[in-house]
Length: 262
Image (tube, rainbow, N blue to C red; front, side, top):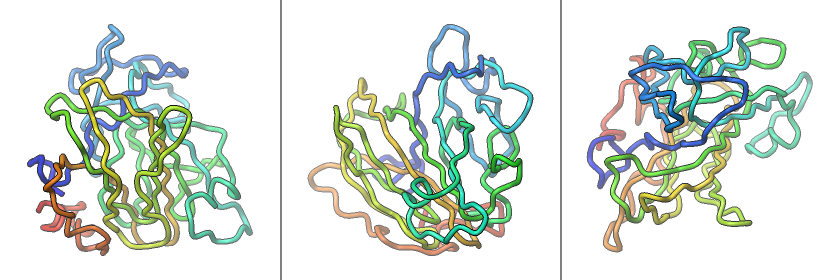
């Protein structure tokens, strides 16, 4: 599942190339690869480190972010006062309180961390409800973007997977239909869910919807992953395994553990 060798699972570093022009203009920053020519930018954002740039639009802050060129658009829904507890991500969107705000992330990469640290925005704040209160439990995010290969990724077949606490669903849009790629739904600790294999070329731009929810305490995690495979590639032995201490040390700045690096 490491990030280095392509025959292992790696975090998807270029999961989004959605061009954005939604009230957040552009912000040039050399570390992000941003420019004013309209080219798509990416950012190696890790929420457990200091923000590298301001490519994310935080809709709950008054100051607008400038120069936003690409990213994942996210919608928020959360459990309202006196509402039931839910155990699937779709229940949050079908029954919960839907925020009228949108937010944008340059990368989805949240290693296992304590729930009371919240779900960070790249600008340094946390995901909040519409009253401006930090959300720590019982909320869901729906991410929309397009998947492409990175500059160093070879065309071929890629197995898609996820590490998440709690549930996640990933769908790819194929023409007029939607295909479920993985189902890692439900309340659980950080769990490695394996999904379908997709064929990627250098020209591929696959629209996706990733739905994630954080249920009850005590941890938060969501990392989409992939690996290049062939007909002879065996099933990843991590498929279905779970444990909040298995992949990251949440007491040590989410330090990657052996199961994640292998």
